[in-house]
Structures are given as structure tokens and as C-alpha cells.
Length: 265
Image (cartoon, one colour):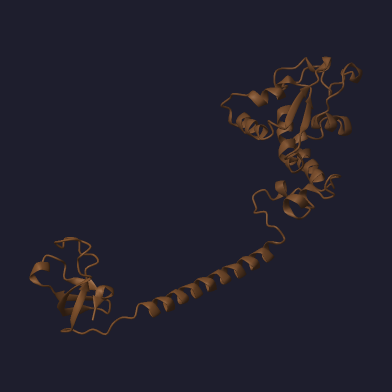
């Protein structure tokens, strides 16, 4: 139970603990073992992962009292001389008072379970102003203070921040602005392309020259080859950007279709 309390405190107080060097004082050696635990139990593994985040900044100190030595390794089984037992004598050691001890001391036995008080205690903590920040933990975490333990009452519902409508409006404006930017970019690219790539007015039967830029198997020195081959006669047009020519005998093994960007009229 003490290990669970430590993990719960680290998760709830992380706003104040991150980047800080602090000490945890415990009366049970079992809590110190969480730093070097090797177990396949999924609950204990989750606790272990939570505590590892603070390994360099957290120091766990053990102050053993005579009253607390009479317990098992993880303090799961309460033995006769525990704080909530009538035979407990506070003067024998500094009393460790968990939530259950507060429950029994303040409300008596048989009326409350400590598990039923945790949501209310958590609500009280989250809505209390912290001295170091001047704000409540709930305000720092969510931006608003709950009036009920909503995590328990509405545990199956989505937790919607009151500023969600404003955020939705902001996202809509950002999305519309991004769409307009994309449209403007496409239009600008099209205008720039059209200025540089004017489709030539060609017809079947025209005599043209074809660029030898992509001709790889022309005989002779590569540096001395002509920039254009031809002239050739256009046999067919495939749209505005592609044409087919009638090649000469020395180039008849090549594909006879060329883009207009490689053609000189």
C-alpha cells in the first residue's frame, strides 16, 4: 500500500517535482526496493516505470521505527501493533498515518472504506492553491477547476476543456488558411510552368530536328556528337506534348516517339 501511495504522489505532483531534487521519507524498506525491482507483475512494473523517471533526483530515506518493523516486506498485512489498532502506542515511534488511519481516527470504524475517500481527497488536492505556484494543480493541468470528482463520476465520458470550442474555431481557420495557401501555390506553379513550357504548334508532315541528349549509342566521340539529329518528318501527334517521327536508317533501332521538349522546329 505504501508503494502505491508513493506512485500516486509522484503522478499527481509531477508539476512540482519535475527538475527538482527531493527526498521521500518512508518507514518501510520495501519502498526503496522499487528502484531496483525486477518483476514481471504488470502492476509492479507500472510502479517501477513511474519511479524510474525520478531516479536521479529522488532519494528514498528509510526511518524505521520499532512499531513498523513488525510487518511483511511490502506492508500488505497489518499486524496487531499498527497505527489504526487500539493497542498502538504513538510514543513508541513516530506514527505513520495512511489514509486508512485517518479514516478510522476521524470517522470511526465500519462507516467508510479508504478507497471511497480517495476521489474526494484528490478533488480537494487538485482544487487547493499551491504556495509555490499560486494556482491549483487542476488549473495548471486542465485550465479549469472541477466542482465534482469528475474523474470518478464521469469516468466513461470524454473530458472536454471549456476552451474546446475556441480551439475548434482556431483549427478551422488554420485549415482554411492552409487550403488557400495550397491553392495559391498550385496556381503560381502552373503559371510559371506555362510561361517556360509553351507547347509548339506542330502538325503531321512538319520537318523537325530531335535532340541527341538521351542518345547513348551514337558512334564516335561523345563530345563531338551533334546536339540534334535529323531532319525527320512527323508521322503522328500524341496530344500536344508527344510526337512520332520517321527515323533514318542509322537510328531505326531507337524508339520513334519523343516529347516536344526535345524537338526543334
